[in-house]
Image 1 (cartoon, rainbow, N blue to C red):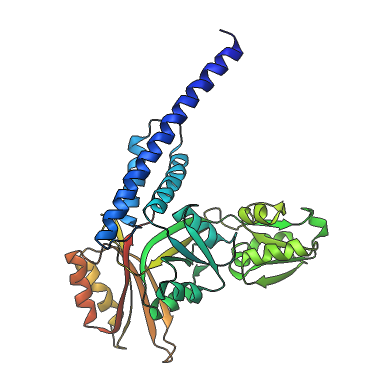
Image 2 (image 1 turned 30 degrees about the vertical axis):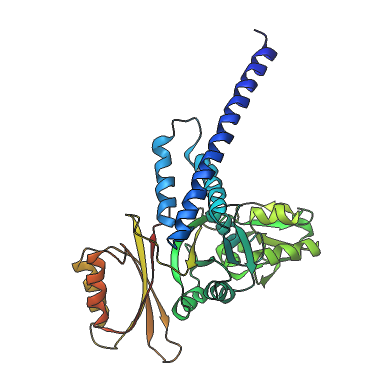
Length: 358
């Protein structure tokens, strides 16, 4: 058999496989539609984080190669997104213009079949979800380099929403400009968090350039597009979206730079078997109170994964404590720990129990 005949034969086999894939995808979509109808009758949510996690965690055991696991997961995220859209339309509000990292996180979690709604502030995202104009919202909560996003912490206390899921996104920052030539740059623009995440690179490579803050990395990219002497620090997505050139790639100071995002909604996800719970509380100002507030978790063998404090706006030198721990609020040991903690609290609020991020 000639080389050309061999290629033709292989391509014909690929065509046959594609026919099977399309048929199976539509068979899956029909099943998803029936599930959507059943959920509607029982008034259940279309997006079920625990079920999504179960599907994605099962993929490695099904994968025999040569597809890499991450490639298979990316494919399935779109399969899940398309299946949800067959069940019912889903609207996702997110903080920032298009091509920000929050936009990337929303697209990563919900895929291209969801309707993504850009909003100018974190407070707007919370309000859109609270007023049920959006099914879910996506907001940043913390960065591995720069720490907590305080606006999100404040809104979690004030708003009547639940944390439904979390997303971890690796953050790679690029210096982008219209021409891609470093010698033409007179100023660097970006969001304060992005500038902080590449502080050492800026000091080393651009010590004499003016550095300016913008409302978002996407706004920085827009500025660079309009002004040939400005360079933006932004995502690779912003490069493609705004048609910019790369001056320098991966300028973040830490290679493992990661941002955690929250999905907020109006319901509590069911347990997945690998969950996280977030709470916020304030305590009486007494000797040994910090020890007493953590003791119930140690006694019930609950692993604390994060603790963060924020000053109370109404009273000087008094604080709110944000706590993340392993487990779901429906677990007896968690309920026991919370009940014990309540005795030392002036205020306590369960922010949500949700599947731990993949």
